[in-house]
Image (tube, rainbow, N blue to C red; front, side):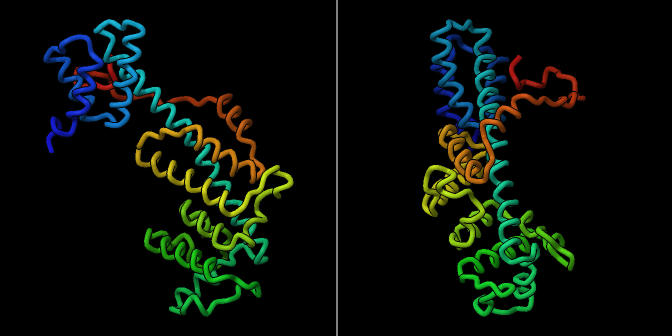
Length: 277
């Protein structure tokens, strides 16, 4: 599929957005945009730029810069969600490791399942871990997470003796979600009580909330725009609140800190068409 066919709808949006006929050099710039920028975010930026241009009367020399400013803002909006999704994932991972370690009275309880699996035994014959009954679904979720670690070639991280919670830091968010919901009667205790929260955190609410967060996480990591940002932040806040993390203060702390950006080492030349200048 040629660039022309890939971007027919984008070219049509350029026609609605721009008030001038681009020169050959300007066409090269717009071709570069269509070739390099995220296609969905570019189309959304063009739609927004068309409305902004109508309202503000943006002159033709500044219209590409306007499109790129909107595109940059959309990148910032996406990246602003990452700290909350990151905090949810890592808070859940740490809380589950701590909760299950306390339940089984051993942080590395999972090595029992690991060694059982490596011995080629059937998981259905492992009904207890350190004298504690485990249901089949929970055991299956741990079993699958261990298989995923092996498939991802992270086996060396959970190999050998003298382990603690390494297993949890090799798992995916999907693994953590599945282990948590696999035995809700076991894992509900890692969260604050309904009385403390002021609402009922049941398995259905947890699953619906996690589904929203996991889908958003996958979209972020695949560079896809997220339309329902407010709902995702609300979902993150619900899980973090249940883990006694205050999202409002976290957001304030993030806003209050700054970092020293890494200075670029490559000077801009005529071939650098993006971002618009």
